[in-house]
Length: 236
Image (cartoon, rainbow, N blue to C red; front, top):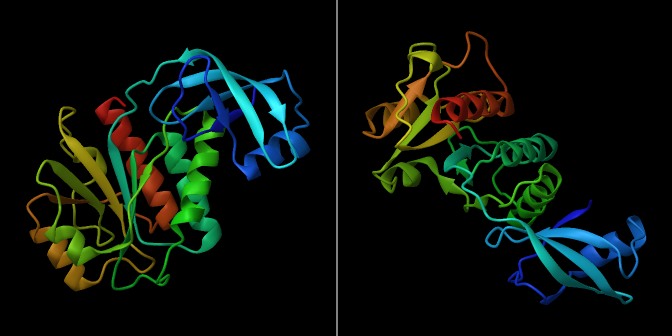
């Protein structure tokens, strides 16, 4: 059954309106008609079964019938990354969402080659991934932040794990993980962190470098390796 993200409050027997693009998808792509059913979620009120009650030219109205799944705890693991070229970043956003990352945070480093990000496109990619993966929430997307500012304002209660390409850091498997604590994983840009950035990271009290692999990994590969390992160790 089709799943849609709808930011409206989801309450029993309430009508909600879909966006113009969602209405086009429902009517023209999927060919659904009045009386057909879909699933909707908003990241707060779980998942609901809804029935199409009106299909107008540019709008579709749904009637919420019943909750199919309540909101569940999905973990609190952040992914921080240097912006990538379009297709590679879209892949990273999609896979991180499927894995259940709670926050996506683009970070500008000395060797970052992409100077800007498009928040709206990121939101669209993560929403689509959440719809397809049956996830009940959508990651929070943070604004592009410089690495130095990030480290200056880093929350004390969260450990920042970063991929260290110099092969001098402990292996990922040797990392001590405490499930009751909060974690984030940072992957650097193509070419790795600059010497100055490595110095900042290594001197930060909440940052810990790890060696992911003896080979040089692409950013999206490194991100998925780190995330998957942390999820297993954290039990999320």
